[in-house]
Image (cartoon, rainbow, N blue to C red; front, side):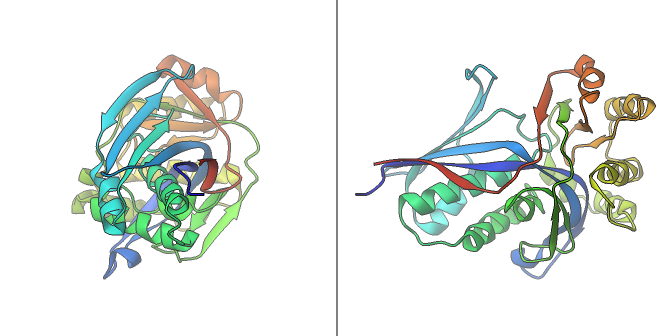
Amino acid sequence: MKATTVTAFCPGHISGYFKRVNGATPASTGSLGAGIVIDSGVTATVTRSNKITVHIRRKNRDGTIREQLVGSPLIESVMKKLGQTVSIITQCSLPIGAGFGLSAAALLSTLTAVNRLHNLNLSNHDIAVLAHEAEVRYQTGLGDVAACQAGGWVVRDGPGIDAPIHRRYDLTKPIYAVSFGPIHTPSVLASPQQMERVASAFPHHAPRNGEDLFSVSQHFTLKSGLATEEILEVIRLCNARKIPASMTMLGNGVFAYGESAKEILAPYGEVYECRIAKGGPRITGVSL
Protein backbone atom coordinates (compact mmCIF):
# COMPACT_ATOMS: atom_id res chain seq x y z
CA MET A 1 0.00 0.00 0.00
CA LYS A 2 1.30 3.45 -0.93
CA ALA A 3 2.04 5.99 1.78
CA THR A 4 -0.07 9.15 1.67
CA THR A 5 1.97 11.18 4.15
CA VAL A 6 5.54 10.84 5.41
CA THR A 7 7.22 12.84 8.16
CA ALA A 8 10.98 13.17 8.59
CA PHE A 9 13.27 15.08 10.92
CA CYS A 10 16.73 16.57 10.40
CA PRO A 11 18.88 18.18 13.11
CA GLY A 12 20.16 21.71 12.77
CA HIS A 13 23.77 22.88 12.84
CA ILE A 14 25.51 25.76 14.58
CA SER A 15 28.67 26.71 12.72
CA GLY A 16 31.51 28.07 14.85
CA TYR A 17 33.91 29.06 12.07
CA PHE A 18 34.18 28.58 8.33
CA LYS A 19 36.03 29.48 5.16
CA ARG A 20 34.37 29.55 1.75
CA VAL A 21 35.77 27.39 -1.04
CA ASN A 22 34.71 28.20 -4.60
CA GLY A 23 34.77 25.12 -6.81
CA ALA A 24 34.12 24.59 -10.50
CA THR A 25 30.72 23.07 -9.70
CA PRO A 26 28.20 23.33 -6.84
CA ALA A 27 29.35 19.88 -5.68
CA SER A 28 32.94 21.10 -5.22
CA THR A 29 31.87 24.45 -3.73
CA GLY A 30 31.31 24.78 0.00
CA SER A 31 33.35 25.50 3.08
CA LEU A 32 35.89 24.26 5.57
CA GLY A 33 35.03 24.71 9.21
CA ALA A 34 33.63 23.33 12.42
CA GLY A 35 30.38 23.38 14.33
CA ILE A 36 27.84 21.44 16.35
CA VAL A 37 24.99 19.34 14.99
CA ILE A 38 22.15 20.03 17.45
CA ASP A 39 19.13 17.94 18.43
CA SER A 40 16.71 20.73 17.52
CA GLY A 41 16.04 21.15 13.81
CA VAL A 42 13.28 20.82 11.21
CA THR A 43 10.42 18.36 10.89
CA ALA A 44 8.97 18.04 7.37
CA THR A 45 5.57 16.53 6.68
CA VAL A 46 5.07 15.66 3.01
CA THR A 47 1.73 14.66 1.48
CA ARG A 48 0.79 13.52 -2.03
CA SER A 49 -0.61 16.40 -4.10
CA ASN A 50 -1.16 17.52 -7.69
CA LYS A 51 0.95 20.65 -7.17
CA ILE A 52 3.93 21.82 -5.14
CA THR A 53 3.07 23.82 -2.01
CA VAL A 54 5.34 24.74 0.87
CA HIS A 55 4.35 26.09 4.29
CA ILE A 56 7.09 26.98 6.76
CA ARG A 57 6.02 27.13 10.39
CA ARG A 58 7.89 28.15 13.49
CA LYS A 59 6.22 27.02 16.69
CA ASN A 60 6.28 28.11 20.32
CA ARG A 61 7.13 25.67 23.09
CA ASP A 62 3.41 25.03 23.66
CA GLY A 63 2.94 24.01 20.01
CA THR A 64 1.14 27.15 18.85
CA ILE A 65 2.28 28.69 15.57
CA ARG A 66 4.55 31.69 16.11
CA GLU A 67 5.47 32.45 12.51
CA GLN A 68 4.28 31.12 9.16
CA LEU A 69 5.68 31.64 5.68
CA VAL A 70 4.18 30.42 2.42
CA GLY A 71 6.46 29.24 -0.37
CA SER A 72 10.16 28.43 -0.53
CA PRO A 73 12.09 28.90 -3.81
CA LEU A 74 14.85 26.76 -2.31
CA ILE A 75 12.69 23.71 -1.56
CA GLU A 76 10.45 24.18 -4.60
CA SER A 77 13.46 24.19 -6.94
CA VAL A 78 14.54 20.76 -5.70
CA MET A 79 11.02 19.35 -6.02
CA LYS A 80 10.86 20.61 -9.60
CA LYS A 81 14.23 19.06 -10.35
CA LEU A 82 12.92 15.71 -9.09
CA GLY A 83 9.58 16.17 -10.87
CA GLN A 84 7.62 15.63 -7.64
CA THR A 85 4.37 17.45 -6.82
CA VAL A 86 3.81 17.33 -3.08
CA SER A 87 2.40 19.40 -0.24
CA ILE A 88 5.15 20.22 2.28
CA ILE A 89 4.88 21.59 5.80
CA THR A 90 8.14 22.26 7.62
CA GLN A 91 8.14 22.98 11.34
CA CYS A 92 10.83 24.27 13.68
CA SER A 93 11.12 25.98 17.05
CA LEU A 94 14.42 27.80 16.53
CA PRO A 95 14.55 31.24 14.85
CA ILE A 96 14.74 31.14 11.06
CA GLY A 97 17.81 32.68 9.42
CA ALA A 98 19.64 32.95 12.73
CA GLY A 99 22.59 30.60 12.27
CA PHE A 100 21.02 27.25 13.17
CA GLY A 101 21.36 25.59 9.76
CA LEU A 102 17.61 25.35 9.31
CA SER A 103 17.59 25.73 5.52
CA ALA A 104 19.81 22.67 5.23
CA ALA A 105 17.70 20.81 7.80
CA ALA A 106 14.51 21.71 5.90
CA LEU A 107 15.95 20.43 2.62
CA LEU A 108 17.27 17.20 4.11
CA SER A 109 14.11 16.40 6.08
CA THR A 110 11.88 17.21 3.08
CA LEU A 111 13.95 15.13 0.65
CA THR A 112 14.11 12.23 3.11
CA ALA A 113 10.31 12.27 3.39
CA VAL A 114 9.68 12.67 -0.36
CA ASN A 115 12.08 9.84 -1.10
CA ARG A 116 10.05 7.50 1.12
CA LEU A 117 6.67 8.84 -0.02
CA HIS A 118 7.30 8.24 -3.72
CA ASN A 119 9.83 5.40 -3.41
CA LEU A 120 12.45 7.31 -5.39
CA ASN A 121 15.24 4.97 -4.25
CA LEU A 122 17.58 7.85 -3.51
CA SER A 123 20.45 7.00 -1.19
CA ASN A 124 21.31 9.26 1.76
CA HIS A 125 24.25 10.43 -0.34
CA ASP A 126 21.96 11.29 -3.28
CA ILE A 127 19.76 13.33 -0.94
CA ALA A 128 22.73 15.19 0.50
CA VAL A 129 24.03 15.99 -3.01
CA LEU A 130 20.69 17.53 -4.00
CA ALA A 131 20.42 19.53 -0.78
CA HIS A 132 23.99 20.82 -0.89
CA GLU A 133 23.76 21.91 -4.52
CA ALA A 134 20.53 23.82 -3.77
CA GLU A 135 22.11 25.55 -0.75
CA VAL A 136 25.11 26.64 -2.83
CA ARG A 137 22.94 27.81 -5.72
CA TYR A 138 20.70 29.93 -3.47
CA GLN A 139 23.60 30.95 -1.17
CA THR A 140 21.70 29.89 1.95
CA GLY A 141 24.58 27.82 3.31
CA LEU A 142 27.91 26.22 2.50
CA GLY A 143 28.67 23.46 4.99
CA ASP A 144 25.48 22.75 6.91
CA VAL A 145 24.31 19.90 4.67
CA ALA A 146 27.66 18.13 5.02
CA ALA A 147 27.51 18.48 8.80
CA CYS A 148 23.86 17.45 9.17
CA GLN A 149 24.32 14.10 7.46
CA ALA A 150 25.04 12.71 10.94
CA GLY A 151 25.47 13.91 14.53
CA GLY A 152 28.25 15.13 16.82
CA TRP A 153 30.36 18.22 16.74
CA VAL A 154 32.21 18.25 13.47
CA VAL A 155 35.35 19.47 11.76
CA ARG A 156 35.06 19.62 7.97
CA ASP A 157 38.38 19.37 6.14
CA GLY A 158 37.09 20.22 2.69
CA PRO A 159 34.13 21.56 0.71
CA GLY A 160 31.10 19.55 -0.35
CA ILE A 161 29.58 16.48 1.23
CA ASP A 162 32.32 14.00 0.32
CA ALA A 163 35.25 15.74 2.02
CA PRO A 164 36.61 14.24 5.26
CA ILE A 165 34.41 15.03 8.28
CA HIS A 166 35.54 14.30 11.83
CA ARG A 167 32.76 13.77 14.37
CA ARG A 168 33.08 13.71 18.15
CA TYR A 169 30.53 13.50 20.94
CA ASP A 170 32.33 14.87 24.01
CA LEU A 171 29.98 17.85 24.52
CA THR A 172 27.70 16.26 27.12
CA LYS A 173 26.25 19.41 28.75
CA PRO A 174 23.38 21.54 27.38
CA ILE A 175 24.07 24.16 24.72
CA TYR A 176 22.18 27.43 25.07
CA ALA A 177 21.66 30.08 22.42
CA VAL A 178 20.13 33.53 22.09
CA SER A 179 19.30 35.34 18.87
CA PHE A 180 19.19 39.07 18.17
CA GLY A 181 17.58 38.53 14.78
CA PRO A 182 18.45 37.08 11.38
CA ILE A 183 21.41 37.84 9.17
CA HIS A 184 20.79 37.77 5.42
CA THR A 185 23.17 34.92 4.62
CA PRO A 186 23.24 35.41 0.81
CA SER A 187 24.41 39.01 1.14
CA VAL A 188 27.27 38.00 3.44
CA LEU A 189 28.36 35.02 1.34
CA ALA A 190 28.22 37.13 -1.83
CA SER A 191 30.49 39.87 -0.45
CA PRO A 192 34.11 39.40 -1.63
CA GLN A 193 35.35 41.83 1.02
CA GLN A 194 33.57 40.01 3.84
CA MET A 195 34.69 36.60 2.59
CA GLU A 196 38.29 37.88 2.47
CA ARG A 197 38.10 38.88 6.15
CA VAL A 198 36.52 35.53 7.01
CA ALA A 199 39.28 33.67 5.18
CA SER A 200 42.02 35.61 7.00
CA ALA A 201 40.37 34.82 10.34
CA PHE A 202 40.28 31.07 9.71
CA PRO A 203 42.13 29.25 12.53
CA HIS A 204 45.49 27.59 12.01
CA HIS A 205 44.59 24.52 14.07
CA ALA A 206 41.47 22.42 14.61
CA PRO A 207 39.84 22.26 18.05
CA ARG A 208 41.41 19.69 20.39
CA ASN A 209 38.12 18.89 22.12
CA GLY A 210 34.52 20.09 22.42
CA GLU A 211 35.22 23.01 24.75
CA ASP A 212 38.18 24.10 22.62
CA LEU A 213 35.72 24.40 19.73
CA PHE A 214 34.23 27.43 21.49
CA SER A 215 37.65 29.01 22.06
CA VAL A 216 38.75 28.56 18.45
CA SER A 217 35.35 29.77 17.20
CA GLN A 218 35.45 32.85 19.42
CA HIS A 219 38.89 33.80 18.12
CA PHE A 220 37.50 33.50 14.59
CA THR A 221 34.45 35.61 15.54
CA LEU A 222 36.60 38.44 16.86
CA LYS A 223 38.92 38.45 13.83
CA SER A 224 36.23 38.06 11.16
CA GLY A 225 34.40 41.29 11.96
CA LEU A 226 31.02 39.56 11.72
CA ALA A 227 29.96 40.13 15.33
CA THR A 228 27.63 42.95 16.38
CA GLU A 229 28.09 44.91 19.60
CA GLU A 230 25.34 42.85 21.24
CA ILE A 231 27.17 39.64 20.43
CA LEU A 232 30.46 41.00 21.72
CA GLU A 233 28.82 42.13 24.97
CA VAL A 234 27.38 38.69 25.67
CA ILE A 235 30.67 36.99 24.81
CA ARG A 236 32.52 39.30 27.24
CA LEU A 237 30.09 38.39 30.02
CA CYS A 238 30.51 34.69 29.30
CA ASN A 239 34.30 35.05 29.30
CA ALA A 240 34.16 36.74 32.70
CA ARG A 241 32.38 33.67 34.06
CA LYS A 242 34.62 31.24 32.13
CA ILE A 243 31.65 30.03 30.10
CA PRO A 244 32.58 28.77 26.61
CA ALA A 245 30.73 30.95 24.08
CA SER A 246 30.87 32.23 20.51
CA MET A 247 28.77 33.65 17.67
CA THR A 248 26.29 31.52 15.74
CA MET A 249 27.54 31.55 12.14
CA LEU A 250 25.86 33.04 10.18
CA GLY A 251 23.37 34.51 12.60
CA ASN A 252 23.12 37.50 14.88
CA GLY A 253 23.37 35.51 18.08
CA VAL A 254 25.47 33.67 20.64
CA PHE A 255 25.74 30.02 21.63
CA ALA A 256 27.25 28.98 24.95
CA TYR A 257 28.02 25.76 26.78
CA GLY A 258 26.96 24.46 30.17
CA GLU A 259 24.21 25.07 32.73
CA SER A 260 25.64 28.42 33.88
CA ALA A 261 25.24 29.87 30.39
CA LYS A 262 21.46 30.07 30.64
CA GLU A 263 21.38 32.81 33.27
CA ILE A 264 23.96 34.88 31.37
CA LEU A 265 21.94 34.74 28.14
CA ALA A 266 18.48 35.15 29.70
CA PRO A 267 18.50 38.98 29.95
CA TYR A 268 19.14 39.20 26.19
CA GLY A 269 16.05 37.40 24.94
CA GLU A 270 14.50 33.98 24.65
CA VAL A 271 17.05 31.28 25.44
CA TYR A 272 17.00 28.13 23.33
CA GLU A 273 18.29 24.91 24.86
CA CYS A 274 19.62 22.00 22.84
CA ARG A 275 22.13 19.20 23.01
CA ILE A 276 24.50 17.57 20.60
CA ALA A 277 22.63 15.42 18.07
CA LYS A 278 23.28 11.69 17.97
CA GLY A 279 22.32 11.18 14.32
CA GLY A 280 21.27 12.82 11.06
CA PRO A 281 18.02 12.84 9.03
CA ARG A 282 15.46 10.13 9.81
CA ILE A 283 11.88 9.10 9.06
CA THR A 284 9.63 9.73 12.06
CA GLY A 285 6.20 8.76 10.70
CA VAL A 286 4.39 7.13 7.77
CA SER A 287 0.63 7.26 7.11
CA LEU A 288 -0.94 4.87 4.57
